[in-house]
Length: 308
Image (cartoon, rainbow, N blue to C red; front, side):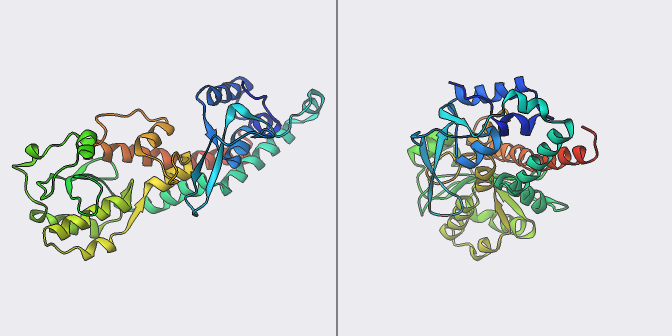
């Protein structure tokens, strides 16, 4: 059942969103069994968990070791609902003031801060974006495909590698790369210095930086190359920033690239788990994540300038 629109849900958005469109977004959230924490329920829908409503599940906070409950939107209730007489008494200026106050409050939200931090990281900088495909995820796994692009999706580096360890069944099922396809490919050490020079000279955005940098370091060690430089790469992880903006979807407090892209409303292009495609989708996701805080700032500016 779709909850009624509350004070926060309707009046806070009155100047930017019609009642019908807000009701539709609320109905969509219920139909899709969407679940959120109490902060997002309050800020986005003006809802709170119903008395005795059990959490849908628990997700790990990206800021601590705590697991926080999330609740199905369909089971929540309005925080407060204005009566019709109260609505009629509100002047346009009051509604505008309420909306402006609500929008400015969003600047304190995690998603806004994450979006702004990303924008500051890439502003006026020659940023690189990378993705890897690997033999597996273990401590002796190696990189078998590496894609590095610039901020605009232009290919800067691409290579497939022949590893010294087998490709696990799970990795093959994900990326579809077999050892036979890599027999004629060079080993990691042949272009290790080239990768080092690239990644040490420019800031790097990686969806799961901890994993990809670990696998690059392991590949260096496996082939007797210098690996100490990997610890000095200036990188930012998009995965946890995406979890702050779109919400964590697992017990680790993170979100997959595919889920983040879907949450951002981006259509996936190409085969997932290929380094080139994943790098391009990471760039598309980055663009949308950065856009979010700009959109809020522009909306606030329009109201302050009496344009809406």
